[in-house]
Length: 258
Image (tube, rainbow, N blue to C red):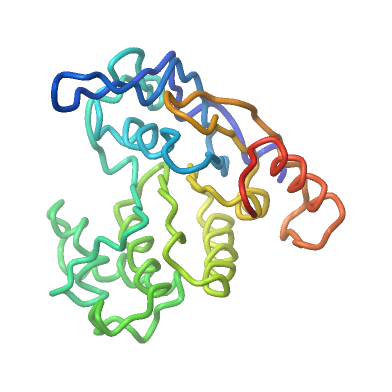
């Protein structure tokens, strides 16, 4: 990674805490005093086991949750709700099953009132970018899991976000497809020069993708445990000595599986 890719912070979390009240008015603390920055054009990976608050933190950054304490800043301004500037891709595919690939990808621009020819051109660009050229008229039930997730990624990109928030997007895929999609998301990131905040529980995936890895403790309330700078050349080789050493170090620190 070259130094000119990363400039000022695009996201800043300041002393962010999140609690939910369940039945019986019992308060569940999910996040505790999270302070985190995401730099412009950075690929930052949030790594931790299930039930440690990763998704809650991502949803707060997306503007889907109002923090109990602290705040989230996007380009220096308080996040007060969802915005097309922050694109979100979930682990579940979340596609409109009654719409084609083209219909799904062009949905955001259509809702914003973009003219048909213009939005079709924009949608086609991102369909091509994610490798789905020729599948524009296919419907979700005709696609594999990896292809469905590509549609979700293309749809998010078509909204022209400044930061992409991906919540374990490859968690439902088989191992071979997952590796392929990791390579694809890195390729797209390199071409688009857009900030990515990526959530995963897979150590090897984190080392393969990240400029920085932020690990979270394995219990609630979620807290940041460590931050690792990943100074490895791209594209990365899973069998490279430095790759393996960092993978083992983080695995021992987090007690996560590969």
